[in-house]
Figure 1 (tube, one colour):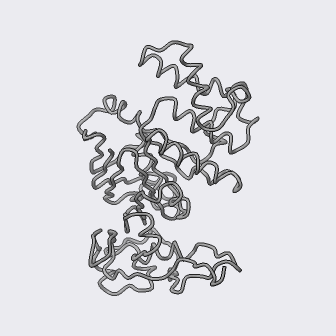
Figure 2 (cartoon, helix red, strand yellow; figure 1 turned 180 degrees about the vertical axis):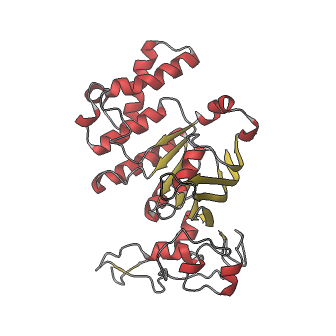
Figure 3 (cartoon, rainbow, N blue to C red; figure 1 turned 60 degrees about the vertical axis):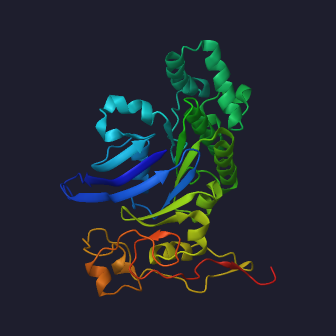
Length: 336
């Protein structure tokens, strides 16, 4: 189990124009991911979801707060002592075209992590070969036709499957998929999503899915949890189907309102929520971070910051002073 409490992260801008300016990527984020469970971080570009995923995978440091893996608080450990814990978490990057070394065959790509694993467990070279075949088969690839090839000889979907196979070589307990389907053809995306779902069910591996697409978050695990992130803060959190069916925060509602409608099959939601202005992160806000763009904000929203909490009969947590269920999701046309 992995938990985060009050995770913060600030970046300093580089370059002559913005040098020295600080950007708050994360503002006290809490999260919890059960062993074998599914969780999704969603939000628009720049909201901090990828930074949070990289922190969880050990690829980025954090400034404040605590990350706990299997009951061990990592802030109490030195960097080298943290490595065995982060090795349990493997990241699947967004771009399968840049994630693989173009000068190495697929066999060579898998060999490097397998050599590390073999030394740790005292396994032989024969085991390494068998394991390479095994992980490729797990992700739906034929080892005999793939191992000798270079990345440019594979399609985008096949490359992403190789990236997933490479992650599986070290027997991870969690896969962090950062927009894992956004760089491949639409026709191949469902296959990758089905693969991640199958690996979760078959191997018991946890899946953390980072996306801006609510539909894919639901596909990975409708029994999982959903964290809606805005400007580095979780503004709504709960069970996936609950938030999709009954969002209560205006920002979540605006995300769902933006989902395209299939004309002739669906009708738009009855109460769409549209932000009143574009995102301007240069403005410091003392109150709710979404207040300037929220069509329902009041003076309280601009002066006080709401806390993430459960109120009334709403099962999900939300950071809004005036939460309200609104019908924003597209519905099937009657008779269809």
